[in-house]
Length: 329
Length: 139
Image (cartoon, rainbow over all chains, first blue to last red; front, side):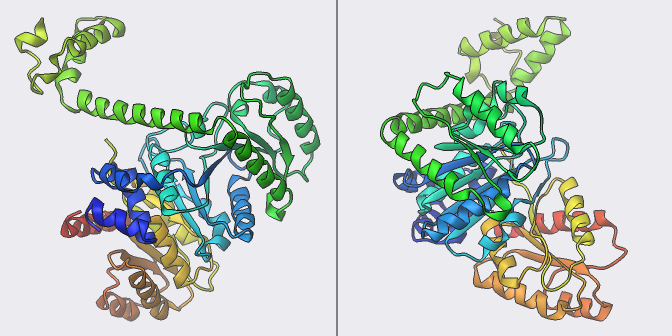
């Protein structure tokens, strides 16, 4: 499996090793990935992408495991992407979400892939959308994207999922938390897990209140607030029912535009990454920044100089040639 | 630019419930910049190989303290090969008598680590071995 043609053909024939390898190529920024993706891209868009996010320990992995179990009872195949955090110091990661999904490992209708967040800070990894596209083309009916345990403002999952579940549990703050902007606003479905615990009823009420007094949504979707006890499998059917209803809601209207926007975001991301590599990959601009700072210019002034040199069309100058006439002008 | 990481599966096969060592090794490898998948206890060779495939790991490390190493290593190797994962570096450790260790290493289970091993040695050995095998694959 050394080239794009072979891997994409094998993926489309149902080869799980090709699926795994292609996700690795996406993660590693392998230069064979774009060509492989273009060979399978006509198959992308059939699976439904449900994102599961929420704070650490809320029960995301357990809920994902239960969602997969119920989907399998309905004979639907499931691809799971579970993101865990990378160390900002070493780049290493301990990927432990699979432990909660062990029963699914033996099921050939389920595929589980752990993914380290690497340099991303929004709750998913840079390659998450690519990996979803690959799993989608492979043919899974349901795609479940579990984010890293998040705080209040990591919600990049909206750039990857059709339906976003935000999973909370009691004991993590008062009603004011439910009034804050950020994470809660991106939920299409709010799940209060560990509903058997003290404070669950109060959290349900606070969230319902917060949802109903909030008129920021323009899509006419009423966000349900659902209690679950994922460890015992309680309330999971209601969550799936809500996902189905949200799917029907989107399919009746905004789905095409939502997915279109996601592709636009994806293009911008790739352009941004490539530009960043091009700009800072060589030493030229880095040297210019150092020189500017040596002159005690402010960061803004140095940035203006750098931008002027880029937008002035001097990017074509050979790397390391920062003292050329063109660059000095 | 994204770079290629070393991905390791740390697995506990069979009927032994002692995973302190496995967790320690997983943490050490994480601190050496690797992406480490930990499966939990009581995995069958089939499950381990299946996880290795789904995760596309470079290395599988088995922690065995049950005495069943002479059968478990070859069975995991076979399950990996069945799935087209013969390129995976299979290693491990635990309570393995020296003569068994020598025999397993002779049969191609690369290198095994017993009690008293410096954890950094495991990480360094994996780094070198993966770099070598990637270079020989040309990928």
